[in-house]
Image 1 (tube, one colour):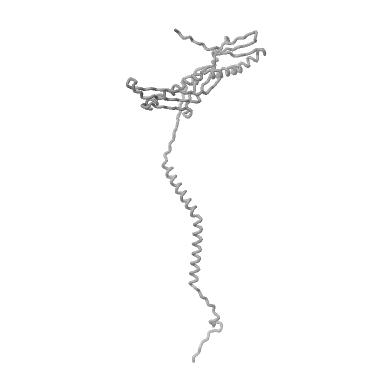
Image 2: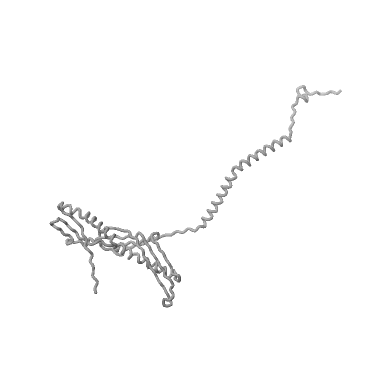
Length: 265
C-alpha cells in the first residue's frame, strides 16, 4: 500500500508567492568605486586649500628651529663697570657762583719733519681737535669782603660795595669727555706715520683743551655777563639789609679793576 504524506496546506507555498531577491554585484562594486572617487576628490580639494598654509607653517618651524640652534651657540658678553671714588682733600671755600657758561674751543697742532739737513721734507702732519660743550663757572670770593669795601656817599645817599671782577674758577673747569662732542681731524705728511706723528699730536692737542677752555672763558663777552649776574645776585643778598635803611638810599655794586703787574726790566 503506497501512502503519500502531503504537507499541511499552510506549509505549502507556491513558487509564485515567494519573494525573489536578485543582487547585482557589478552595480554594488560600481557604487563603492564612485563613492571612493568622490571622497578622494573631496579630500584632495580640501588638502589643496591648505597646502600653501601647511608649507608656510613648515617653513616657519624650520626657521625658528635654525634660529634656536644659532642662538644656543651665540656668545653672551657681559660688561661690568666698577667706579671707585675717594675724597682726597677737603677745604673751605666761600664762593659766590654767578655764572656757568658753555664754550667751544678748537686746538690745532702741526709737526714738520725733514732729513738731510732740511733738503728732504717728509711732510707736515696737522691735527685739529674741536670740543663743544665745555663748562666753566665764574665766581666772586666772599671771604675777602671787608667793611672797607663798603663806602657811603652822604650827598647822594649812595651805598657802594666794591668787589673783584668775577673770574673763571679754574678748579671747576669741565672739559668735554663725550666722544660724540669731540671732533678730531688728522692730516698725515706724505712720508710720516700716524703711529708716531699723528697720535702724538692728538694727545698733545687733547692736553691743551683745558688751557684753551680757560683762555676762552676770559674773553670780554663772558666776563661782562658774569659782572651783570654778580650785580643781580649781590643785590638780592643785600635786600634784607637794605630794607632796614632809608628808602632814599641807593645801593650799587662796583668792580675793582684787576691789578696789573708791570714787567721788570
